[in-house]
Image (tube, rainbow, N blue to C red):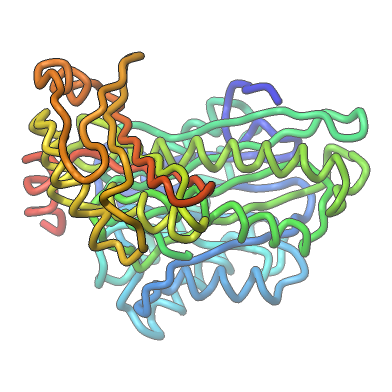
Length: 407
């Protein structure tokens, strides 16, 4: 596997665009399109929040029932959540407009929205934006970057990534664009992640990989403990690489599985590190837990802890915050037989062992906690399972950003 430039336009046959439609923001791109020259098989996972946005319901239905999809239209600024049947009609009207311009059935058009919950989409602006998107879509890296920028809300930078692998002697590419900075605590599973590939793979095989991947990527991140109404993770495959079909149980399947996971892990970390107001990415690695499920639970508990996040922001090596978060996670372990360490910048400091804190250099620990990437290592010493979760520090800016988000 090699990392290549670009994002969603890196795989063969995919075009994209991002334009300004004045949905909520001014003087910035706020609508994006993703289009495939050939029909795609689609797989996705969606928010577990009981309150599901209209686009989530629309996309879930298409993933389950539509024979193929070929386009995606996304807007920022307004989430189209809490909008009832009117919201569903907005999805239908969006799909109809794009379908008419692209000569597709409306059942082949996915939709996405992110932003403020409650207001209805201004459909006149949405439709005008779609017309601009269809005219400007292109296969260029710049077009992919424009789309990645257009789906941002409070993100500080676009999140795109692409890789290339070989399947049956054919180059196969996977590209991604994602957004999310606040209301990030996926449990599929506001987070959106769109991944495209030119691989030949069945819908069944792709669906299995998507459901497997989400467990150790997007479901292992948290910015603020809030699961969005709009969380969506979609993967589209158009088969234009013309590789031999990727079949479960084969070496090619393993190659593709590892590459897809690498893309999603990269995007998940990018989302966590760009949390609203964040100064540091926090990675918690739980080692030697008794079960994989318990390892995941423990790691997520640490990176979701507001006190742990605040301690990292303050560069305070307060290991009690971490121990407490492990303890209330619900996963069993013996605190008298475990270790905690901080790691970063090529240095590692042991801070807790076998039921009590150990002497350590506070200045060196604080220096590690001052880095842009901080790792917390928890060795549970009760099994062989490992899991990693990602979060960010909790800063004053998080409150400022969310205190006036709607206005």
